[in-house]
Image (cartoon, rainbow, N blue to C red; front, side, top):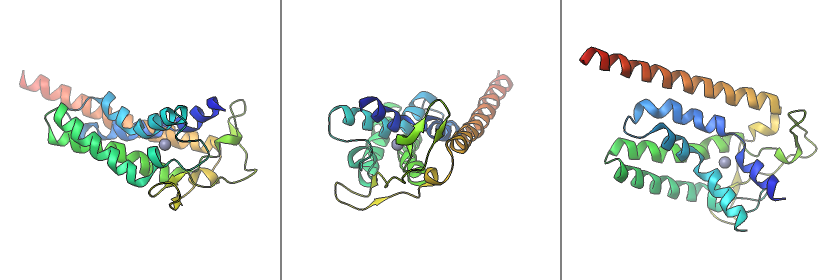
Length: 186
Ligand SMILES: [Zn+2]
C-alpha cells in the first residue's frame, strides 16, 4: 500500500508549482526552486509521515495538511526564508507559497486517486471519498470543496497543465523584463 500512499500525496505538482512560477516576480531574492519546494512542503511531509506511520493515505492528514498545521508550517517557512535571504519579501512570499498548497488542496480535494488508472488516465466514481483536510487535529471537522470528485482525471490534468502554462508565462515575462533592464543599465 506504500506506493499508493506516495501517488496520492504526489498528485498535482504542476498545479502547485504554477503558483510558485506566478509568484516569482514578487520575490526576486528567493530562488524559483525554493518557491516551488515551498508549495510542495505539505505533500513532502505527507510522504515522510506516511513512511513514519503517523499519517495514512485516505484518512485525514492533520500534520501535513491540516489547516492549523499548514499555518504553522507557513510561518516557519516564512521565518526561515526571511532569515536565509535577509529579505522580508522573500520570507512573506515563501510563507504564502506553503499556505497556497492548502488553498489549492481545499478546492480540489479529495482526489479519487484510489480508483485512478494510469493506463487510461481515468478515475472512476465508484465511491466519493471523504475529505482528508482537517481544520485542526485528529477528530476535528474535515473540509474540501471536492472539485476533483466532480471532474474527470483528464479535465483535472488539463486544468493543472493550464495553470502551469499561465505560471510559466508570468515567469518568462519576468525573466525577459529583467534581462532587458540589465541590458539598458549596462
Ligand atoms: Zn497536498
